[in-house]
Length: 488
Image (cartoon, rainbow, N blue to C red):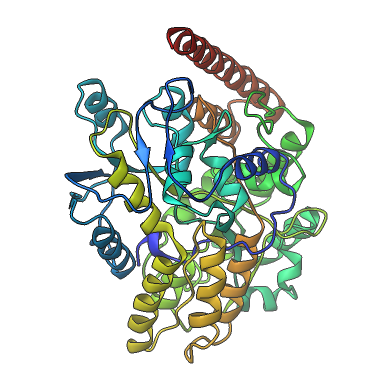
């Protein structure tokens, strides 16, 4: 199963007050109307002038899509068929292949922009700051896209300087996955490893790790650094950046504490190098995965991996739970893709109708039915679709997940944990220097993991790097915006 089509977080409940997204997302939702016909005005610097969007307009021409594979699986093909029908008599051109951002920028500069792109949400802020993609407020209003259906954290990821630049798609979140046999043998339960008490995780790691001939043969607990630093920081109650996306917070004492915890956890298991070597030796996507071979006690992992495990090693004793903050609240770090309309494309109207159809509740339900039918036919559990559309996820769970005869323990617990995680996901907001910001904190963690810097020093360096990148990018954005305003 592809990552894009695995269970992605669902959020019928509000996320646990992630400070970096809540205010921005609520402001975004409040500002957007959901019906009628909208036209960008030459007096509105935030919107391309002269482009009209209407839900009853007849579309023409060709829609060129970049970065999406309609034949990836039945979820993609079902939705694409419906969206292609919705834009008729306009025609669809969507060659398979991941989005190449440099190729995209070159195409835009050459006046050959595609009409629609499928892009990672953590890249959208810088694309918006470069004005490589257009704001979608008038598209959303004119086509009647109901933003109330979408998760606040996902909307925040596609909202830059008060305007929406993308419509979010799947939502990937993490849950705790564990080898139940190793837990039981160590006298542990999932409550010992859910993150609510870091000391219990450390104790669990030491109890579950194993050695053979003096070498580490089983990892007790892998915190999955460097990529999950935002998750562990939020567990301590810290965001990596301010809610307005202008101030880096990488040297926050709680971020320091979170990274120190992860580093200490590796040191107690013979060091990161040893853990990584054992981690990398596993057949991650096959029958010889780390849980099936008793080479790992527990780790946080994206929810799509549940289906992998169920497919390749369904008899491995597993246990699942939601990641918790130190206050005991469920949480997850939401990431995923979005649809965006490049500036200068020939057919933004067809692009808007297409992205609306791809992400509407009815379309997701049709895709879920296709997936569920296939899974039932193969006598395998359907574990849901986890998207940025909260309403769709709730209806999919009610109609297709709970009634599946093949969903038995422990996979039922995995699904429940995934839905709870999706309902409590947070995200890093859209940033004008998103790549530089992400690289700063990844480099900070890697310096410590490699033994080249202390936690405090490395995060201070990252703080300086990230803040300089943000300051420069915001300054350039504001200068460009003022120049555009004075020209109108």
